[in-house]
Length: 310
Image (cartoon, rainbow, N blue to C red; front, side, top):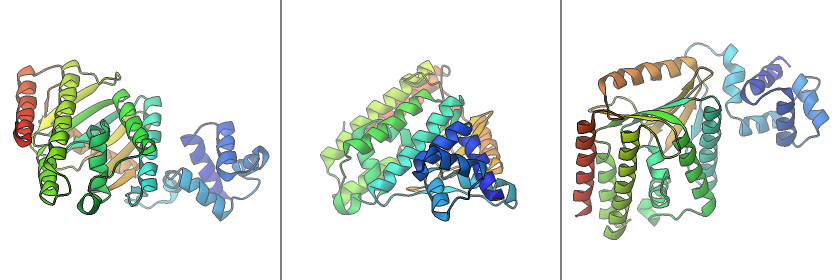
């Protein structure tokens, strides 16, 4: 029962006060309020199946509950990859929940972009279709897979919440290069044609202009603040950390479409130290350095138009 007590304490920290936890358990475990309350206060034991349901619906409960018994340098992570539409939608819903929590805590997103960031692709349906087809290894065999309205609604909700969040973003100056090489390769394989390629480049140009506009104002379209910096090199993978006095959540990429999420204080601290080191070297173009901002964005846009064939 001691571990069950740890689980319930973790639910209180993550979800809310006792009544909120009881109602959440009532819904997740499909039991009445009285039964959920007895589970919460420890009068009756959780079955293994019920514990599994809690983990499925709130994966971070494991890390919170096991925190006191984990050895140093032992971490519990939430791992996401995509082999089906259902897994993709579960990943997007996970981001939505984290961003909603981050907004409640007035968190800042510290983001590193070796190539174009996730949110760049979720801002447009065609970009999202290209990126997700790439993630799910569909491009090589079946070409670009069209998103249904339910999946794209989730993509757009992630982007909408991102626009509300304040962010500090460090971008590699060569952030476009990897995307260009990728698009050209798939074009050579006839997975996409030259018309689709041109269309993608036009959309990318429009989104870059949005980021340029945000950097001039220091604010995204939905009101979240942005500090956009550029650097000549990055030793970090694409990913970011949500940070506030009451929350630190690290989300990073292991490879093309394999993502891990950590709450561990040590890992978050290491990310923050490295992020701040890169930040001290990088050049901010937000509300300052107008000439440098014009040089960087004009160079990126010219490169994009050259690739497009203008």
